[in-house]
Length: 219
Image 1 (cartoon, rainbow, N blue to C red):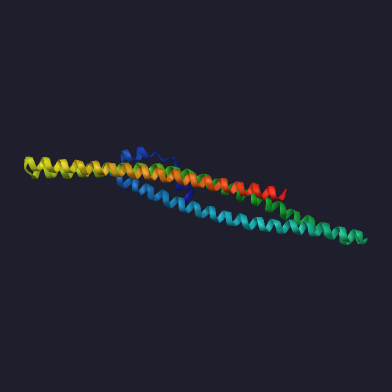
Image 2 (tube, helix red, strand yellow; image 1 turned 180 degrees about the horizontal axis):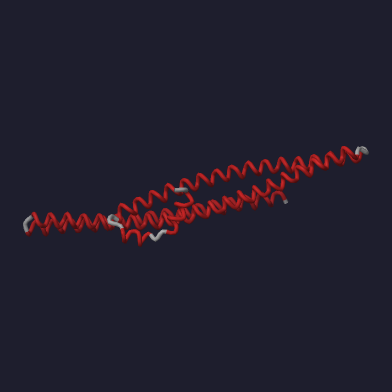
């Protein structure tokens, strides 16, 4: 299946509905996360290829536009020297190059649009991946709690009444610690994201001030 087909299937999929039908939701959502990560890598690789192609096309366009200017100057030079035939040849060559310029501009526009769609698709998939990861962590934690309770129940059947109660209490404390640790990890991740966003915004503001100072210096 191609990367674009997989992208559409993933973005349009109803995660909750798929999990409701799954025999093992924890395993299924883990596979979903892996698929999303692989697809994002492929999309970024394709986007990078388009960006490289755009850079090359921009360089070729500059060369073509320089050729147009060069033929225009040659035509003017020939006219000044009374060499009309040579001037016509220069004008003909200039017009030929202009056709290539038009083609190059169309290719640049196509690549720019393609890169724009790539970036939009990547953002959509990264957003869905983030929400799916959170859901995965929740399902994983719930499964761990369920397994812990199952082990506690099994131990209760094999132990004495007093010993059973003591073990069950310890297990509940362990489950509470697990839940508390999970909440702390989620809070830490959220804090990290906020600081990262703040740092990125600060870097952007600093770069903006540098740009303003640079432009002010030119004026």
